[in-house]
Length: 121
Image (cartoon, rainbow, N blue to C red; front, side, top):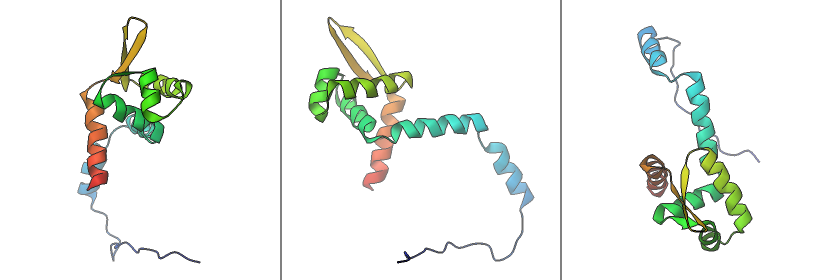
């Protein structure tokens, strides 16, 4: 069964607007930057990591509290926190024997909150 295909509008004649192409081309980020950005979005493309980010956005939490909040094992949470830590999306501090995790900075908070706002529109 063929799905309904949406036909996008397109130009009816082939004409290149060289000034526009030059302006846009010059404003694009470098290839390395777009690769890094793509990797960043891949990190956020994992629902488990997003759930962890949302949890520690509400309040800094230790691994045990994150695991309990999200109904996950401590091992699974620790693995994902390692990935998030290596990507500078979370930070941690020691409180006695506990390690408390929080978002690395307001930029991370802004990104996930804006993404949620977009989804909820």
